[in-house]
Image 1 (spheres, one colour):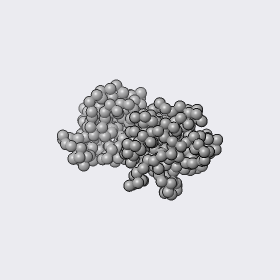
Image 2 (cartoon, rainbow, N blue to C red):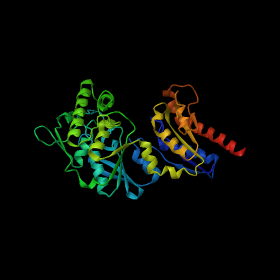
Image 3 (cartoon, rainbow, N blue to C red):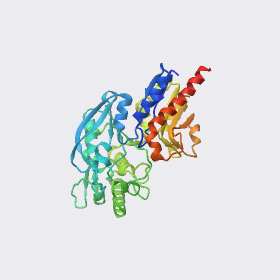
Length: 380
């Protein structure tokens, strides 16, 4: 082999995408010393997204003091790539669940800091901003981020305020006229890998708020607040977000990005592939290695493995998928561009045991696959 592309997702809770790329690369070089190896670590928009982009294409990590989920000052960051033309922001860096520690309360947390990062990137001269959703502690529909860029929210008494999850129900009017002109001509793309709606039993509050600290009564209250926000957005901005897939992502930040930032929601892997010019990179590749913790029917909806495979199929490049586990009902993956699927777990062990062996199992699996490829090449 003369050239391989490594573009795995992380194995959640065991191996990061960077870890997997490192293991794969080392084994490729062991068996094909002269092979060109292109590593493209992938993150889904949550924690680690900025580092993955910087690792894949290079760039600069910039620190910025912004508000944390409780409006307290904190040091956060964003990345710039493509010569500073593009910024990458992960909302988890200032609105993430780990930041609230033992103060989980989606009625009080805010995305204000995310808006501050967007403003900082815009003021630095970035022409495109990629915002990764995931791992949030919030349920404010992106209102905090909107307020940070100048969007005004008013209650029935005409008083201006910055809504949080618990006060979405109080929004009576939204005014976009004071939104900063700095972001007016910037392309904003939001990485979103779920299709939950803004509200309802499959929406932001019911599905995600419990892990952020909401009890049953709070879930109902938050959901009602999101319903009100959706209603006011429709009346004042003219956008109906009720059934938009992904609107419920990250405490309905998905909906907020559309309404307040004129953003489009896009699968995370599609954003990554476009950013790294994947179609051009793979043209002369002999093999692509990708993977994820578990491949199942959810994977077929367009996450990393399938996103990569569909692009590779158009260029006739084979794709080897390495996973922790493979579920039934995934045969369609082969029609979508997957060449073969291998699982790393060598013994029938409980995940609590096998997860501690993920690195060595990945090493062994990659080694065996490459031994087979080397043998085939020799016999040609």
